[in-house]
Length: 183
Image 1 (cartoon, one colour):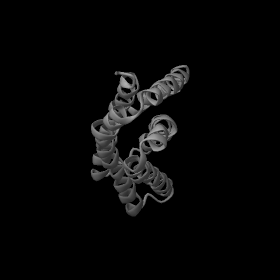
Image 2 (cartoon, one colour; image 1 turned 90 degrees about the vertical axis):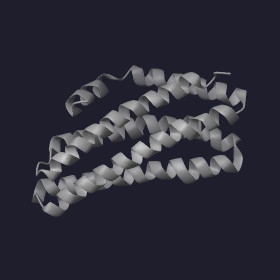
Image 3 (cartoon, rainbow, N blue to C red; image 1 turned 180 degrees about the horizontal axis):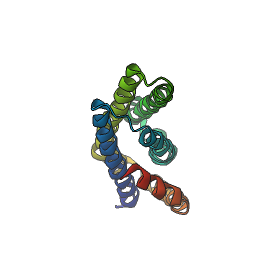
Image 4 (cartoon, helix red, strand yellow; image 1 turned 30 degrees about the horizontal axis):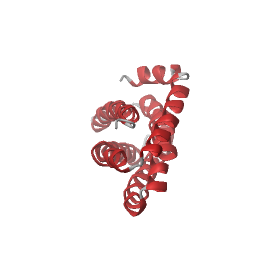
């Protein structure tokens, strides 16, 4: 059955968008090596991450797909989801928090140490998300599709469609932010 096909395709498309953003953030980190910190970009990057990469994408995974996996797929899902994907979501949030703290410090002090921490936390986020998306696309999503009971897949698909429609009704800010980020 292709019950989760649309859901998985949508999540993978969001990964593509997030990975394009990660490429742009990496470019901005290379500029730091040349001495330029694009403070406005990093402020907008934090907004994009919190509202969209985390606030929408990770929230859909956590509240809908991962929840269904944890409720229905036993110890393997516990390890993969709780011990892997959810831990990585929290790690990403930590990198963003430190990115923001050091961006604020840099605005006040222009210190080399703050600049270094902007670079390291931004790149830690980039590398984490690149690897994370690959794991989800190649392992987690196919595992869910193969092993969730059909009725659960239908519920996941229905819940995801509702959430996606809600997001599409409120996309103007996201589109404008993407333009500001240059992606």
